[in-house]
Image (cartoon, rainbow, N blue to C red; front, side, top):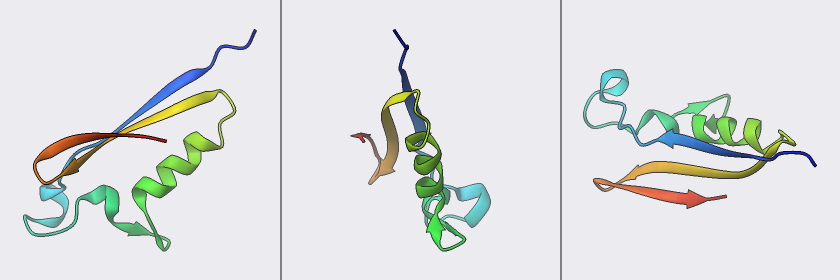
Length: 68
């Protein structure tokens, strides 16, 4: 039986060192036309050993968990 993996992506930072205080968090900055978080998700979704993906993101001063 093949063991599956739970991936946890911590994307809760606000990116102040990269962008200053009033910019988007870095996980939402676009690289090649897509947000960084989308590139990250694609890598985990394409991995056949990853069964579930949890993402923690920063929303209005709270950390939220999203199940993908």
